[in-house]
Image (cartoon, rainbow, N blue to C red; front, side, top):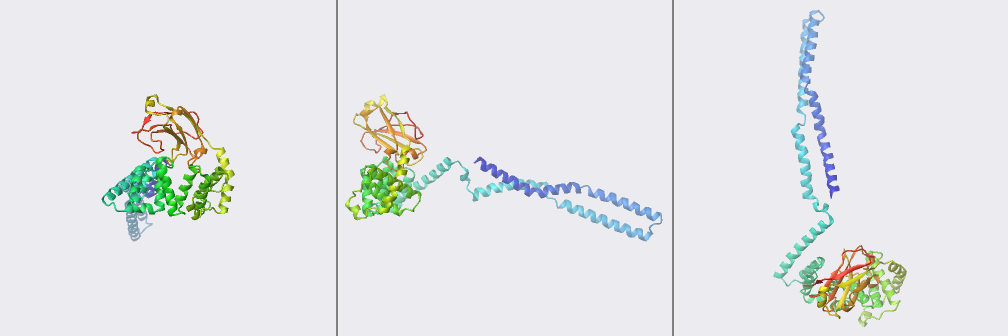
Amino acid sequence: MTSFYLAVAALVVVALAILLRPWWLASRRVASVDSLPALNVAIHRDRLGELERDRASGVLSSADFAEAREELERQLIDDTAATEVAVASGFGRGNAIAIAILVPLMAVGLYALLGSPAAVLPGDMQAQRATAGMEELTAKLAKKLEHSPDNPEGWVMLARSYKSLGRWDDAERAFNRVGPELNRNAELLAELAELLVQKNNGFDERSRQLVQQALRLEPANMLALFMGGGEAFASGRHAEAAALWQRLLPQLEPGSEDAQMVEANIAKALERSGGARPKLPRSDMLAGAAAPQDEVHRAAAGKDKTSAAKATGKSVSGRVELSPALKAKVNPDDVVFIFARAVDGPRMPLAAQRARAADLPLDFVLDDSQAVMPSAIISSAEQVRVEVRISKSGQATPGSGDLTGKSGAVKPGVKGLRIVIDQVNP
């Protein structure tokens, strides 16, 4: 931002120098011209004296003297007039000051009117402004829908707006108000499933059912295929995950980032499955679940590359402890979830581990082998945060009464983290 303002100031200075240069030159001319009238008079007197001496000595006749005198007077009048014009043609100090003030003011005004002043703000301030604007528009839409609730398209737009703002509960409620259209639209079902996965840090029973329903309605739906592959991979059905992603791959632009990501997912799933052919539900087989042979070969070709990436992957390790003040609130069979999230990225965990409260204190290691989705791994993140939750319900979904703790932002590869579970969800 500072460099931008310095550049603008430099441009304004250059513009003023160009605009004020004629005034500066004129002011120099005027300074020199101010003495011309007196000089012209002095020269006229000298020449007139010479003429009178010539007449007295008989060099000039009276008629010639009179004619030469008239010519000298006309020349004096012309010189005086030229001097007055030169003085009058100067810009004047007032004009120069006006230009020096008005040019910067006009530049600032035009930039505020036609430019993008917010573009020079720091990235975090721009993001805050954008979020605030999105929040305001979303609030207006929500208010409008409360007065006119029979608007499926409006509820879908509101749900997507809440989702982009990370307001998972509000987004879920908005999806649920779409009405019967929700259960007839594979894309909406897949979007709701994706929302629940982000909200719950992984797949639960409802998100699984939504993905399956979306695939039954539209077997070629891209988001449903992607989510279905992720659900199968997370559940250990790696061959099925590879088959679903292989059905997605032909719909993507060859060589694009999305296509490369899906190819990497397929290679990882085939590696985990040992190359076994998938056993998909009959409905999926009838919908064309058999993968084209060339896609299988493409995935297998990337296997070595994916394995190499895994070998160089970075892990995050440390120890989880329970605060002595909260021991009375924990049962030995309570489920403990340990997961790592990208600091700047989606809420879906990059890696997760499950344990029992009776195991605490517990040493943990989170690495790429525990990825929830093959394309989102710890070694690909700049910074991660490790979070721990003792779930009173036994579900991954956060609930009231859960006990939590978390680390600060760390880089993948860190060891010796100490995380204390010392908070209770309201």
